[in-house]
Length: 197
Image 1 (cartoon, rainbow, N blue to C red):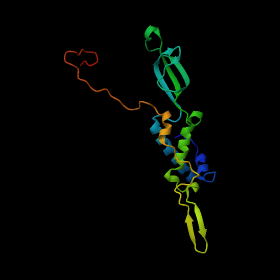
Image 2: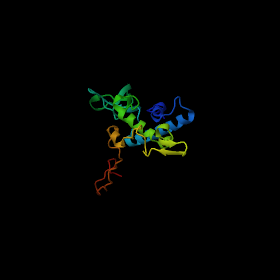
Image 3: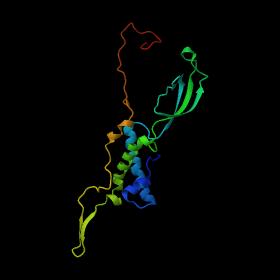
Image 4: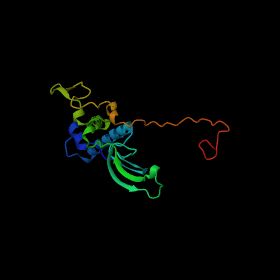
């Protein structure tokens, strides 16, 4: 899985020394992957541009009418030679294109990166991070006692924003819908037509 934010970016926020050791890097990358999986599931789309291929596409004066948006680039458009021309003799094309969001570098997707960084930094697997450890408020040598700060989280870490803050990028209409089955009245069925035997 390609990571949208880097392990070093999370390590700096958590106070880990860099360069990262293999074990610490692996725990941070697991935290980032878990946050990305949660975000992808919520948005219903990948976080990086995806290549799509559509056949039977007709050109219009305003450009290509394609199923996935936002369109980043059209990679190729090849005339379909095996299909019949569409209405008014318009040819159809097979179009390869890149579409989707670029959560890694697009300026407008900065809130997605913020959510990923904050959520990964609060991952349970990183509870021993230097920035998340309880802080000593006082210590005595002769009495051999230590008093810890009672704050549950240090103010250094940003609390993860609510997942709803990413709804701007969420795909609409992702629910599966199936039309109800309606019985066909007798005598209205014709072979070869919808509803026919």
